[in-house]
Structure formats: C-alpha cells, structure tokens
Length: 114
Image (tube, rainbow, N blue to C red; front, side, top):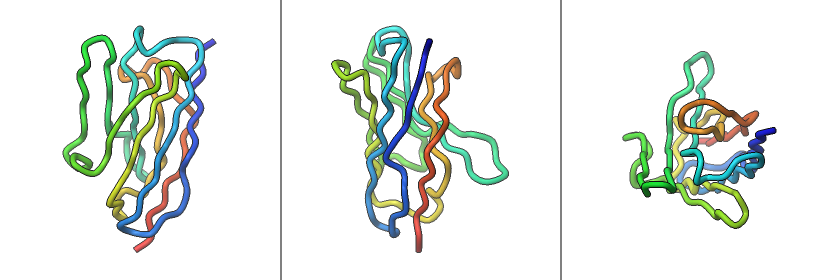
C-alpha cells in the first residue's frame, strides 16, 4: 500500500521559512516523480514543485521559483520542500503527491501571517 505522510506545516510570519517533509512508503522515487501541490481555499490544487530522480528534472511553479527548493533523501524515502521568504499568499494546504496524481498525502496546512 502506498502512503505519503506530510509534516512540517504550521504558522510562520511573512519572510520566514518552513521545511515540509513527506515520508513515502510503498513505492520508491525511482518509480515515480514526486512533488508538492497546494490548494488555496475554494480553489483547485496547483502544482508547486516536482522532482524526477530518473532523469533529474525539477519543476517549480513561477510563483515559488527562487524561494522554494525540492530535495529528496532516497535512503529515507523522504522528499522535502524548503520554503523561504514566505508570503501571505503562500498560505494553503500543501500536499505531497506523485506528480502524475496517482497518490496523495492528506496535506499539511501552511499559514503565513503578514
């Protein structure tokens, strides 16, 4: 059974940083590109960042380029999202997921206060 479990969300002031973690079980990053999505209240989920270990490609949404960094620890089967220079408009529920949308975590709330 595939499981993705996020952690690291919380409340932070604008300009601050958070690091999200996603522990994966049931599959390896060699098999699936994995990344982060977010959902604003009343909106559709949007892609934030994805990483494919098979070809080394990384994707970032324009809104987070230069501020967010995705990384992985294959030995721990964990993917991270380092979020710096956070803005109030980054407030959302962040989901870890396979980039194709096959598998999803339950999400972790990130709130950035102004």
